Amino acid sequence: MSNPHDPSLFNKDLAPIPMERRTWGLYNYVSLWVAMSVCIPTYMLASGLIAGGMSWWQAILTILLGNLIVLIPMLLNAHAGTRYGIPFPVFVRASFGVKGANVPAVLRALVACGWFGIQSWIGGQAIYSMLQILWPAAAALPAGLWICFFAFWALNMYVIYRGIETIKFLEGIAAPFMLAVGLLLLWWITSKAGGFGPVLSSPSKFKTTGEFVKFFIPSLTAMVGFWATVALNIPDFTRYAKSQRAQMLGQALGLPAAMTLYSFIGVAVTSASVVLFGQAIWDPVALLGRFHQPVVASIALVALLVATLNTNVAANVVSPSNDFSNLNPRLISFRTGGFITGVLGVLMMPWKLLGDYSAYIFGWLIGYSGLLGPIAGVMIADYFVVRRCDLNVDDLYRRNGLYEYDRGVNYRAVLALGLGIIVALLGLVLPPVRWLYDYAWFVGFLVAGAAYIILMQRAPSAARDWIGEET
Image (tube, rainbow, N blue to C red; front, side, top):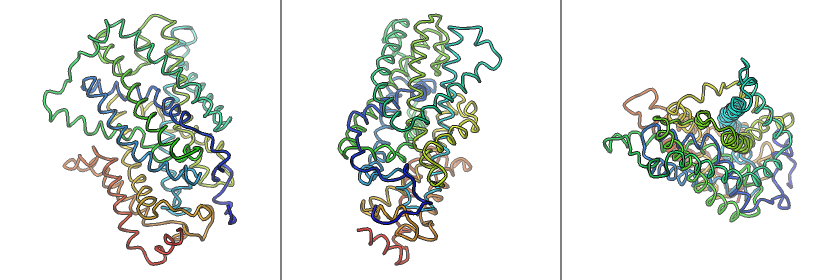
């Protein structure tokens, strides 16, 4: 960078990635999404829709549509990461100000901490289930489940200690392996249930179109909310891209296809549980515990464990590590931010966040989508509408520059964000407008984005001059 940077806004982890270090190609982004999608929460997403009453094809179409929708803001926010080599907390300084960026960054980071805790708890459960099968005496220990949870948590901490290149390595080699094991599990359990015919013959439980729509709308919002987190911090990954084409095509090929395929595995296996056990078992760890075949169950649980580790470090560590580093770059590195994420993930009590399918889909996923949709609305409106994709990278790292606004905070962005969140979550307290909550991500995105554009158009001349100077 040509201008001196402010130590309070800069460290080597937040610095722009030079072209010679941008080595991620199309395969890296396809495998990234395959590895992040092939995980137990994706499986539970699909199986939860089946448990809620959808037929297999209704569940698959809902998931596919949700992922095609979230792919749009994903690709839009990815553009700046590739063009300028900057991570999410630095990118968001353009709209919220060099200090105001901490508001959306911390909101995003806290959601990631919740996800980190959930994934760690799931991984611990998988280890505990394997112990029950292979070493019952050890599993019988009073604190057995907690020991397994913290063992898996410690494994995640080790990967964080090794850094971003370890994450890239894990994604590259694990993606094809996990898909193969998932397909093997699908073949095995459907053969036990008598093939795909009985498994996929169960009709929808909804008697009328109205009943279906009432369940479908919040479910679709939850599907969008599932990846609304990464739709914000995708610059953390695309800053390493060789080209815009590599990351855009890689994501377009990887995200919808991987999510739909693995969701189908979740749908089919859950439907098979109805045939075999007379009830829809939406938790794959609990389902595998029903089978008394140690070799098959252990292989499947190891695959789920590897998948969970891959997803956790990629989706739930990279962003909050950068976000926490952004709070105080001089004291908090990427590695330290990752350790903070791990501690907060435990403190958020994931064993309570991950209740039944209703709490998972309609509570956790929709609830935080009402926080993240407005952030995406402000970011995209600022970058594409207000600034026309032009940023001054030097000034993103120094005080009293183009993004200083009012003592480092763009209160117009904060106001638009607050307005979007309030409107999106209003349905929780006012039953007549419950639909606002059911559409939380969409409502928050549109309200915050529109409010930001209006507020910036009415900004004082000084603010308009800042925007004009960028070009």
